[in-house]
Image (cartoon, rainbow, N blue to C red; front, side, top):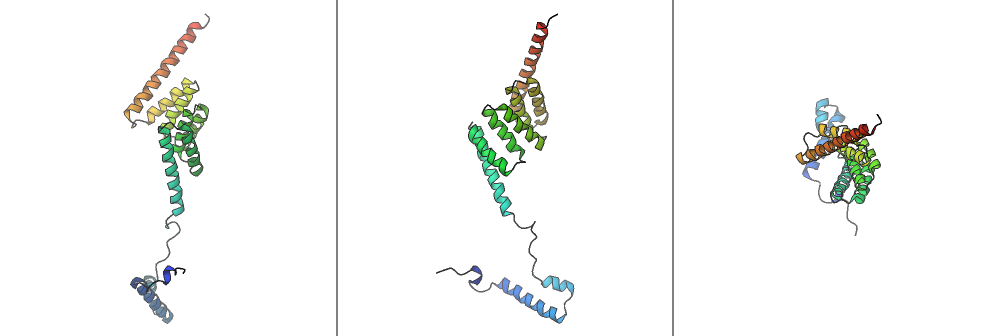
Length: 199
């Protein structure tokens, strides 16, 4: 036995009956021409909400999937499962290509996979999307260090320290330590180069 449609089940609710009665009365009075504009508006049923006011279930489902996959990727990054994190982040970026945090995390996943050039590209794209994304500069500094360019690494880490004033103290300490190491190494290399230069 097939179920009946919901509209056909049971009596008409009192609120609906009242609306039907008001609508019928409005039609009768309209036909008689005895209603002014304000009364017609008061008696008319409420209009359907505009498309912008309707709940965006499709967008909500999309956002929920992005959030779920992004959160899973973060867990994988913390567990050092870089390949799985990169896979999850590829899907996040397919769904939300303008999400700077996804670009940053993809950069960190690629650093974990020992692919600093590809990581640098993702950090650069995160910065292009949001120039105030502090973690992107931190990751960029690490990518430049892995590629052996301490001058670029130093510049990126300085940018990170400038933007990350409200980061956790241990992150700032590590960033300052790395910056000090790189600057010391650059000064030592410059001094060694000057000493070995022919006179």
